[in-house]
Amino acid sequence: MDKSRIQELIQRAIDQMRFSYVPYSNFRVGAALLTKDGKIYTGCNIENAAYGPTNCAERTAFFKAVSEGERQFDAICIVGGPDGVLKDYTAPCGVCRQVMMEFCNPETFQIILAVSTEDYRIYTLKELLPLGFGPDNLA
Ligand code: THU
Image 1 (cartoon, rainbow, N blue to C red):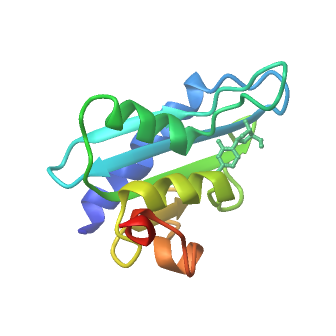
Image 2: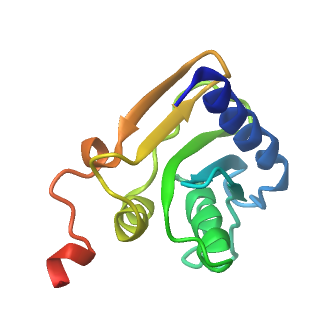
């Protein structure tokens, strides 16, 4: 992926944090998910008074995309921080990694963790979820 595409994803993820609904943690997370045909679906975290129903930004992006008929993805960018201030990389939680495993090739799907458009790291899903259990195991 070229640098301008990466920076576009980072900026879209940063912009998305303003929609985060985070009355309990104040920790804003934004995500931007790139489909194989070049469309971007964004997501934010959405918390809940019962805590358990909270939806992470990554899953919001995936569920928006899948519910619109998308099934093929190249990359996701994730940003987050207290009150939306980006200081550290925000890595996806285990549940979100498993959702990625359902729809993405772990060898090639790119996970971009960023603190700015100039400061980011890219991992494959396989690096963040080694030996993942996915649809192939049930085939
Ligand atoms: N969160 C995400 O949205 N994505 C992650 O991968 C890590 C955690 C959210 C959930 C909750 O709203 C807040 O961050 C604090 O855990």
